[in-house]
Image (cartoon, rainbow, N blue to C red; front, top):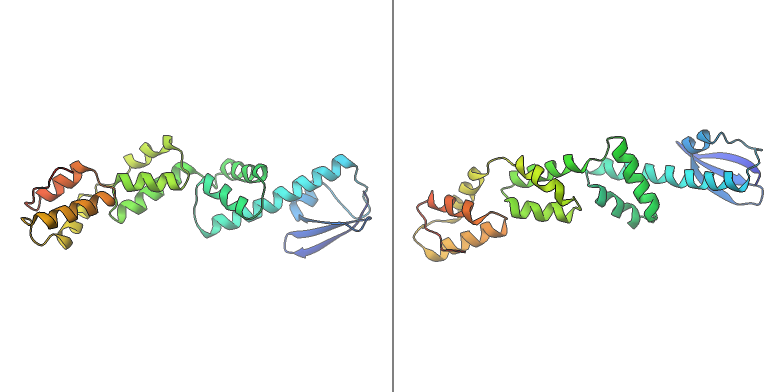
Length: 203
């Protein structure tokens, strides 16, 4: 297939035109890596290599743009790329490329998620749920939770704002249930309530 023109359409973006009237969207990196120029004849293997390189290069740019907006896990990135029309192989390729280049790191991301939710006063149970929802492998959960700061101060602040009468069993039950929903363990809840002279019921 003869290349009849290579046109720049945007910074770093090119369109390769062929003698049969078809065009292929590509990138500067893909075109230069394959040493393409107007007038070059491509055989079937070279044309297939161009299509693959172009698709991957464009997908890498899309992946980098997604990561520039917010941090995410490998699985989240793949899901976003699939939603944007990339196929499974291309999405996996992009995720692997980003990991290899140190731009995507589930271990660091798991630690960041843990710190974020711990700072908001959530407990390990809620944080595990968030790590799972974000597609982070279970084998990384314990390491992230081990770095979780002591949240007894957050528990005390939460209880102080809601427990006006530590002898009111209904209030104690409501506070206990609320803390459970926030992912705190029974042991931590009980210890915190006792600091306020409240005796929680077994939950």
